[in-house]
Image (cartoon, rainbow, N blue to C red; front, side, top):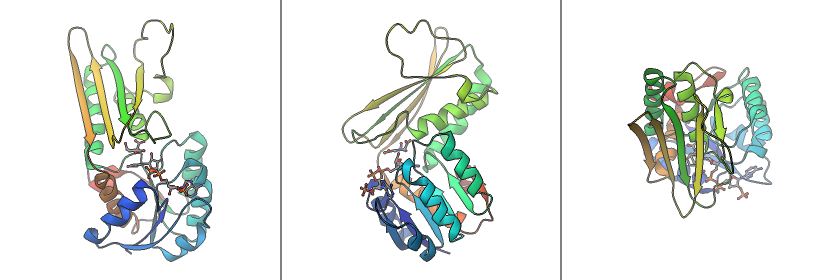
Length: 242
Ligand SMILES: NC(=O)C1=CN([C@@H]2O[C@H](COP(=O)(O)OP(=O)(O)OC[C@H]3O[C@@H](n4cnc5c(N)ncnc54)[C@H](OP(=O)(O)O)[C@@H]3O)[C@@H](O)[C@H]2O)C=CC1
Ligand SMILES: O=C(O)C1=N[C@H](C(=O)O)C[C@H](O)C1
């Protein structure tokens, strides 16, 4: 159960995943990119990883479902309708979807959830991220995950308290909101900082990815773990035992 097929195999992450496989005893079972038929890879693999684009998700899920092959979805920029598709497919196959496959971000999410719970709504929460110039979605999937962790810590849904893309005369900050800011430039692999700002003091919880290998290793570990699971939707916390 270690043959891994890759959607987005020629991309930055796809190539990093191929490089990470030998050390984890995984075998590359083929890849598909834009314009390729996703079905043969799904049939040839024990498990799939998808690091491509939201527009491809529906076809990738259909191929995985038809072949009864579990799939790790690392693609970000997903909307509500994509999550609904994942939930539906998880009735038939094992699926793990995450905006970040690194150990560090899994731990940071837990820290942010705990800090938000302990500090309460008088502490303002802002999430800043910086990525390379070619990243196409914002806020990053990781920033949104961290926002969800913070909202959960406060017993809220992120959709009800999120503020994205401030510009112009936006007025004073509303109490209890979670704000997002995105920077793009150079070759930055992925920086995330969660600021909890109180009166007269603030806490900054940050993670800096220095190499895509951390995401790639996590993706391969997740795939090998998922290959043995029954149908359902899973998280990185379950893979990492956090
Ligand atoms: N969860 C995590 O830990 C991480 C997630 N990511 C996410 O993974 C995704 C990919 O990132 P990255 O590798 O940097 O991006 P790249 O642009 O380097 O690679 C994307 C790959 O997907 C392919 N692709 C695009 N559209 C389709 C399609 N319709 N069907 C099949 N393949 C397609 C591209 O093919 P072509 O070039 O031919 O268009 C390309 O090979 C992004 O959403 C990113 O945010 C990134 C890092 C970590
Ligand atoms: O596109 C990227 O590069 C990354 N995308 C993921 C995200 O949107 O959070 C994970 C990582 O930060 C790199």
